[in-house]
Length: 119
Image (cartoon, rainbow, N blue to C red):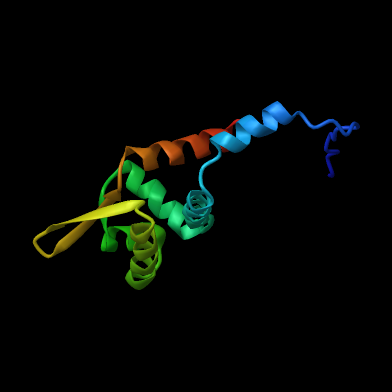
């Protein structure tokens, strides 16, 4: 089912609006970082890990059991999430527990779910 996209039927540029937005737009490098940040959310396994960690901190063994995947697969995804600063870890003896990096991540995730559930 295709939806028609409404387009402007005139050629008027609202220069004041364009200038205001242009002046407030972040630097190109920051926009690229933001794009990379959101790319990390594009994997179903990583989304499941983020959801799990939004509920409780967990170790690799727990996450692997929950998601029914190998520990190696979980570790690979956690490495990507850690590089993107979405998760952090703490060591307790021989066990490493993972959690969301900060409350921003939980809020981004929560907002995304709320948006999806609006339908």
